[in-house]
Image (cartoon, rainbow, N blue to C red):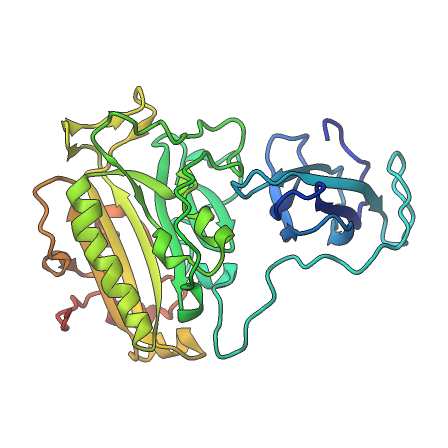
Length: 375
């Protein structure tokens, strides 16, 4: 929409399907209440499959004027068939200027069917269960602390640096499946238009890897889950040895813990400026648009798969590891050499980590440096 619907929209009905015989694809509905300057997602992603139109109902709940966007979010070539779009007030009346809608077929599922209770899949709230480390918000007033949330992970994005300050996610057994690596590096369509959006070519010739924060192999339940990890807002310029050896070894160790019956809450980020890649030391790449970090860090909270996780973490039933590595080619492949305390990371980054835990638990746990086995 290039115009605003009047105030009072309560329900939004959209009929969608795959176009003809095209492959399945995924779309999201986004809304703006400030004339298109900023958008937030409404509801959950919708998966289209097959040519039969299905109607999805979204709750608008807008006391102000509302502008909508439909965003195709997967990287496939399947086209969308979007049919009637109806905007209604709470009483069921069509909004002036919008078409009346007839009851449609049952709503299309907003997400893949939920697995059994024994195999929990990460939800958006799980990804921020340990807190919002920088107090990021989805507001254009905070471009260097901008919150992006999706089912696979949450991001505190720094527009001036062109990279995330932090990425947070939860990893359980059901998050790892058989979906192949997509390698579809691309700009993030959820970034406001005012922000520079890195592309798959932004790192070309820089001597630095497009280093994932949330790893591809942590999200292999579905093709869409894996594809989401290749959005460029999930990347940092990372020295090849840091990314492929040190960080690769840590990621494999983390997934091995999950395969042994654990679940893991993870926050990863970077700070400082200036790293050494395959072409030497650089402070920025992409004509100065993307900052090369000096340090790359991660916090892992590992505990047996179960429920009441925050209570169990606070009571000391979890293992907490904090890692802080240099972003250079000389970094050791042994990530365990870089273990520090959460307190040390907070001092270096200015972030508030594990902020959802009780203050007493934070004070007790964040001072510790893990010394447990890593084999």
